Image (cartoon, rainbow, N blue to C red; front, top):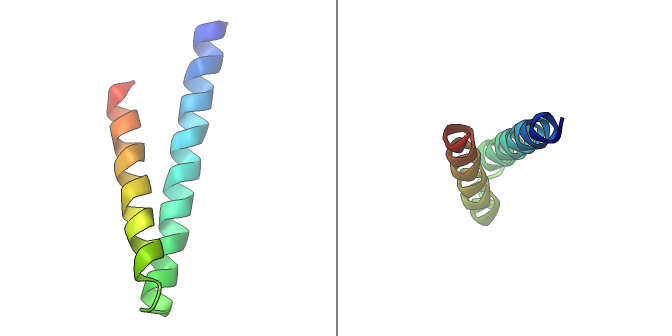
Length: 55
C-alpha cells in the first residue's frame, strides 16, 4: 500500500510538472518577454522526465 501511494504521488508530481511546463511554454510563445518562465518550464520538464525514468 505504501509503495502504491508513493508511485501515485510520483506520477501526480510528474503530471503537475508537465502541465506547468506546458503552460509556461505557451506563455513563452504568446509573449516572448517571459524568457525566465520558459527556462523554468524547460527545467521542470527535464525534472519530470528524470523522475519518469527513475521509477
